[in-house]
Image 1 (cartoon, rainbow, N blue to C red):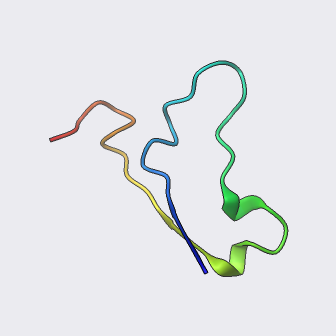
Image 2 (image 1 turned 30 degrees about the vertical axis):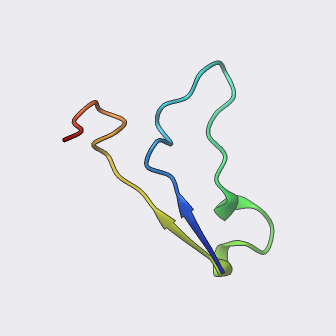
Image 3 (image 1 turned 90 degrees about the vertical axis):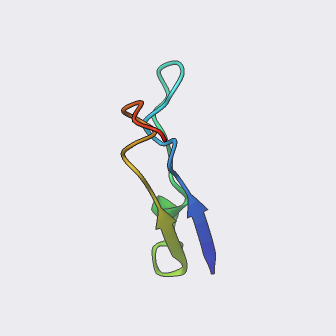
Length: 45
């Protein structure tokens, strides 16, 4: 089981997009992704 903290997934430098471990072969059933929209839109706090 993997818990993937991806609250900063929208903040990307360069041209390579964010790649989640969830998209890897065989990982979808074993991954719990934790996300947020506030970090990516500068609404922290």
